[in-house]
Each structure stands twice: as structure tokens, then as C-alpha cells.
Image 1 (cartoon, one colour):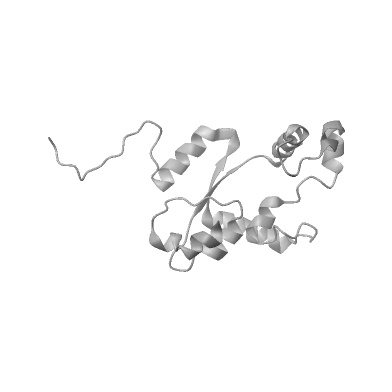
Image 2 (image 1 turned 30 degrees about the vertical axis):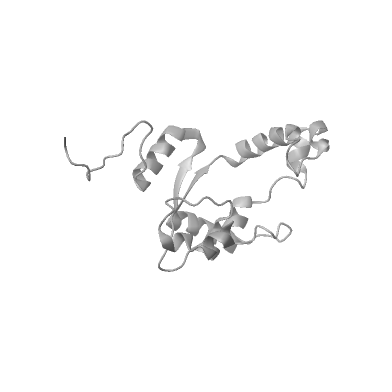
Length: 157
């Protein structure tokens, strides 16, 4: 995906308004350059709520390649204490350590991730989706649902 987009010079072409990638570090490293920069947006969820949701999802997600039937029989307490819970996935993704799950993160990694979010990310909250969508629409000049595009190039009838 990302390497193919790079070979097509997708960012430099200006054809894409939005590029979706689960790994921000990889996307910025491969696609963008000092002249063609991006701004990301993300919706954040309370980490405990996210972990609880993941626990219940994993208990029934038989279609996932990572599905393990053992999840059906463990308690949420056992899940929280297990090694299958994620290990600061967002920090790892932002600092380019997503593939190094066993490697401990440092305070510097956290500081870098916070600075990336502060400088490069428009933040929304899962708990307030209406405000989140409004914020994204406003910042990126997206249209609200049902809003018509204001095309000033058309001549009046």
C-alpha cells in the first residue's frame, strides 16, 4: 500500500485529500517529504474503555487471524494481567517501534509521541463524537452531513 502510493507520487500529485494509515510513522517516513507534509487527525478513547472493548471483541472475533479460543474462557481480570493486552500501541506506532513489541519504551519515546500529537494531530474524543466530527469538519474544511458544496464557479441562471 504505502510503497505503491510512494511509487505513484500520491502525496506530491495532490490527488488525495485524505490518506488513511494505521501506522503514522511508516506513512510519514514513506510518503511525505519536507515540501509535502501532512496533518493527521485521530479519535482517542480512554485506554481502560478501549482495553475492555478489545477484551470482549477478542472473545468472539473468530474471523480475526489473531483469534485464539482461549479468550472465550478467561476473565477480564486475567486478560488485563496477561501478555496479550497491547503495550502502548499508539506510542509505538508514533515513534516507529510498532514491530518491537518486546522492547521497552522509554520516557523519551513517550515525550516524542506527545510532541507529535501536539504539533501534528487534530485530536477528537470518542466520548464526544459530535464535537469531534465538528472539529474535524471545521479544521479540514470538510462538509457537514447534508451540507451542499458551495461551488462559486457556476454562473447564475
